[in-house]
Image (cartoon, rainbow, N blue to C red; front, top):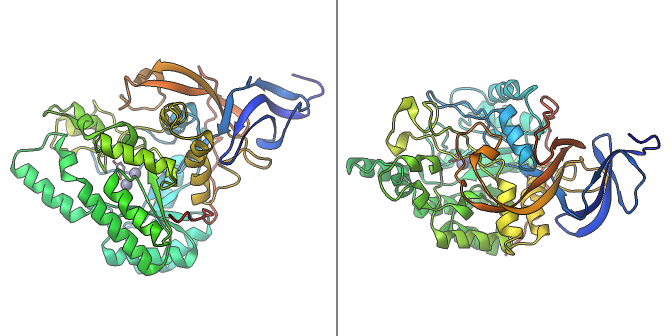
Length: 474
Ligand code: DUC
Ligand code: ZN
Ligand code: ZN
């Protein structure tokens, strides 16, 4: 404690990285907010020496699933407590999971229920996207406009999954609301009927092991739905953001749209950079159930296309799509304690904690992307896309003091190291080259490189403004 302290916290000798610049500065923090960037700042009550290490804005994970209600026996392993704990230890200080409407119920009920799940639980700040699964006139004309005005400014539309999917007319209705009220529509683009047809044929042939999941959801079904989503958004004349883009054919559709001046934004996820369909199995072993997610990981060639899209600006954001199910559990990848046909395996993989270290290791230290691009994809653009910038997603006076101080050094990842409530990571055995040495949330140390420092209930609910992303036509 210093008697003449001017700041609550000073992070000294930081190599500060933002989406536009990398520069050396001390970071002065008061009341949980960055107040000054400069050289030789006055003392802080808490002094942190970053000693020339890279310091980035806390990550904004704009696509993760926490404690989302599921049909029994499935149950997500992470709620707001363990999910935000895991996020913080991997450098993510803002999460945006989904309040999912159930068909036949109101959207407002989903939002109220989701607040009850989050209240008092979160260690870092959070906002909500909405999932619109039943766009009744009341939802379209009353609930959605009111919720957008209250700070729920983004919603996800599904073109697959029986309990969530919308038909094209419903997609148009929801997109029209996004246009009228300035919200961001996120689209899960896979052709539901084609998946069902393929799944039945595979089942009839006895092909039900986890690896067949990838055959039931080939690139073609994603390409077709991506094309359709783009066309529907063009008809309504509204921007959209295509989530979890997995490979070349979807990327081609998005490039075409950009080339025609359409505001089509795109998200990808680490699983499409680091996993392939072989991770679902090369034989009929059930081990591959761990990596069953949708869209499925593709192949090395598609991984390269996704890397290229990160480098050249095709992708707007990199999110985790953390969808946490335990492998060895009846509420997880073994429904009812059984090895089940792939159709019944809960879709999703964990990734909140590994998103930033994976991209920093292979992207930045692997020489594929700049530090500025890393920050843009993992923090600045997600904050802009969902109306949280400049409070989130940057290091600047007035922004929340959410910071990651990076430690560079090789180690082999295993699940023991992680803080989620999932019993595996798909990235076990990978050599990583970086991990947060420290994470600060609102100026408080929440991860010190060894220990998690709980701030349960101090994570705040964030009301989102309108999207402020600028289009990047190609
Ligand atoms: N796919 C989704 O669309 N959401 C959650 C998990 C998954 O695999
Ligand atoms: Zn999805
Ligand atoms: Zn998802």
